[in-house]
Amino acid sequence: MTRRKSIAAIVVAAGRGERASANGETTPKQYRSVAGTPVLTRTLSALLACDSIDHVVTVIHPDHGERYGALPDLGDMRLLAPVHGGAERQASVLAGLQALAPLKPDLVLIQDAARPFVDSEIIDGVIAALAEHDAALPVMPVTDTIKRSTDGKVVNTTEDRQTLFAAQTPQGFRFPQILSAHMRAARLPRPFTDDAAIAEWAGLTVALTKGSAHNIKLTIPADFERAERMLGGTGQMEFRQGMGIDFHQFEPGDAVWLGGVKIPHNRKLKGHSDADAALHALTDALYGSIGEGDIGTHFPPSDPQWRGAASSIFLEHAAKLVAAKGGRIVNVDLNIVCEAPRIGPHVAAMRETIAAVCGISASRVAVKATTSEKMGFAGREEGLMAMATAMIELPRED
Ligand code: MG
Image (tube, rainbow, N blue to C red; front, top):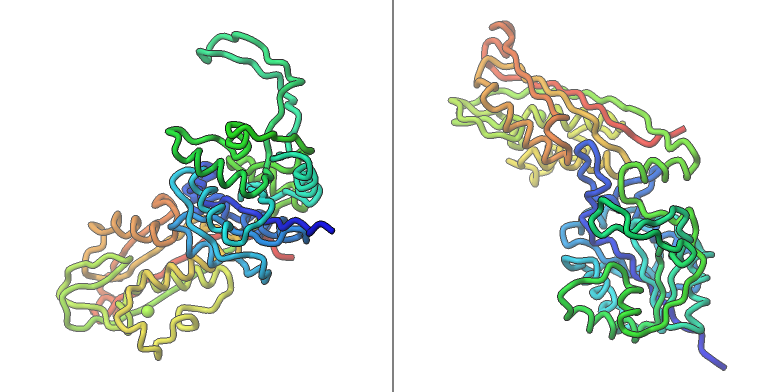
């Protein structure tokens, strides 16, 4: 009796994924949501839906540990701890193969994180082909006529479309063969564009299996719009708005923190954290937009660990909560009311700081200031006030 072959899968998610970004969006594409679920989560779920797959390892960018940790828990023991990738895709795949080596799988499937619509039919087709071939990959016939041009200006020849196929993933291999081929390929000066190309170079036979028109790779913003339409048609988002307001008293000191910027002044703001009323108002505006309480709910003043804390921690937490819901910050608008210090010279730095913490471009951040014409507590310089609004876009909940 022959033992069932053990199968492992590698999901390659180590790219910076910035090509799909638009409008200052900084979330890498594999962590962006499609119809409310991150792309990488969809891809992992698709693989884990195949009972024949015994282990799945994700190769992530070394800077993306927190993003990966924030993905929904799939609660599947077959999903191994992620490993860090290298500078090129090829190095990342090799890292994944080396992480799997101790498990000695018979077969391995290598999957792009940005192809969340892979299904069991495609996967089973690749696995079945590996019974007879060293390697297999799903393909689609090329429907466009392909022209070859050496100078990019004038056509040299028209290719025979019948002999051309577009490669998809997962690409499947016999584990020891592809590990060995990858290790040898790593010594070459130029990387290959996919794993099948490494198998071809190593002299392995690579079979074609049936791909799917749905198995698209999300690369540019238009791909995400198409993906949204594929999943329930509308991919509808809705706008949400939040507001926040905060007051802090002055006390003796030499600088105030406002908008994440330290401004020399003959007083400081009194508070448990760094007392940055502007960031507090902004944080509450973001919490408000998703109905998630306020700054005191998440960071109780009674908790000594927030004593003197940089308020950017609070703002970052709120921005991450928005992202975790598949949302995106459209813009934030901040107003500071005080007689002194003068805010104008620091507006640019505040906008940059807030934009960086929120992961958006500075063009989406407004900072304004006014005095209260010497009236009231701000006019008497007993303290100051900040108000903020936030507009976010969120997958529609019905
Ligand atoms: Mg406050």
